[in-house]
Length: 370
Image (spheres, one colour):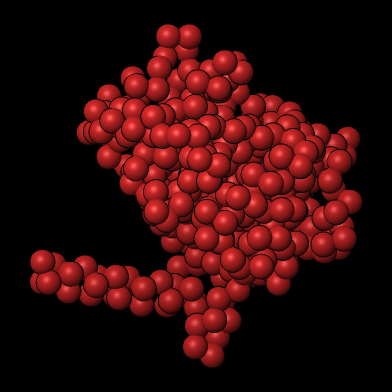
């Protein structure tokens, strides 16, 4: 159901924050969610067509806990896609709120959605609401958020004034390259340690009999390319397979997905899964057949996607997955962070203190082993 919560006042008109904790009520938000996403700068992983399959296929045991913000006219101006994913700590259960989509799929990069120019105000409204209702949760985790997101700064500022503890952890990085008319894939590789090795791989692969690169973005060809991609990646978990197939239909309906397959003599040896996020082409996953790993197939496909994205008018390409880091280890990066927030005293504080002790012990033992 939708729980009317509180009115949060700030610069401009007040926002009404509500909690949506029922799956049926969530479904009824789809049209408003889509419209809000279209007018926001939120990442693709916060779109309805990504998170609804994620929750239905992977996290159906995690009740939704969406925070929504409405203005004085009742229009939806903000949404923070949270769900309950409780932790067991001995005999106790810790009530944990997490970002939807932050686990299992390798997506990450979820963030709140806000109408244009409203990100900071919406974030402050949600943070203030969570502060006031902290008796309903023990641990809040915003995992995989882009390090440059205003959400992180606002939450830090709001919670720093309260009896809470905050911690930021590094959660990965992706390579970003602009796609100007003169940019070439080789220019990106020159920032790494092994440009000559890649060029050697590319020459050898292109000389193989039956070398072909296929691109699919709709219909049966796309569905077949996905099955090839999942097979090469060795994915067998039924819930993850169901998520990928479900999300593909939703994404393809809005022309937000492209799959590239490299074949040698008719055999699929590498595949990359690409996503369209406004003016950016995301290389989300890159997989290679077992007998072809380390032979440059994934990078040849990224090379093709680089040229294809530039020809399609994208402003940049972002590599969220790369087969070998050495090829791009000097390239510009976008970092992802996890923000954990918990009351200064209580069950979560006790759990995190024990985690810190175990982490320090592992580091100490690792240092001795070295």
